[in-house]
Length: 106
Image 1 (tube, rainbow, N blue to C red):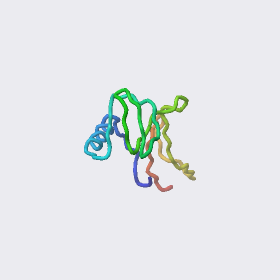
Image 2 (cartoon, rainbow, N blue to C red; image 1 turned 60 degrees about the horizontal axis):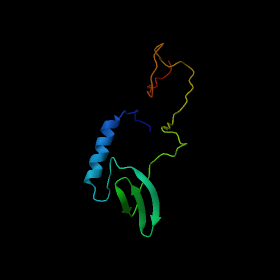
Image 3 (cartoon, rainbow, N blue to C red; image 1 turned 180 degrees about the vertical axis):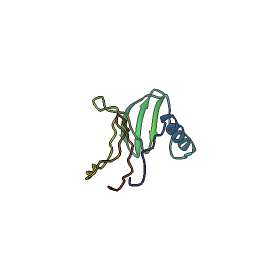
Image 4 (cartoon, rainbow, N blue to C red; image 1 turned 90 degrees about the vertical axis):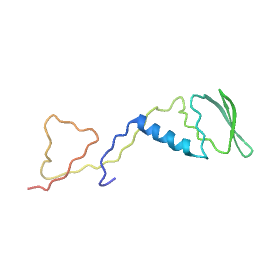
């Protein structure tokens, strides 16, 4: 987004924050360490067969990847700029997901 730089968030910090929010919720139940099996639509909701027994819910978010799906996918949007004069780059320096402040041509 214009005016915002790329930010790195450690996965452990993200999950700790998300699990805290879920724990505070009265509408979401997170079951860690439980293996989900069959998910079946039933009257008024969803039935999930799990390693801890059957669960009934109004809604289920199934985020399990399909066997043929890629495990990781990231998508970024960027701009390619052309200038009449060169931008100041340090030879041999590579910046991953960085940005360059644009200086006017002299």
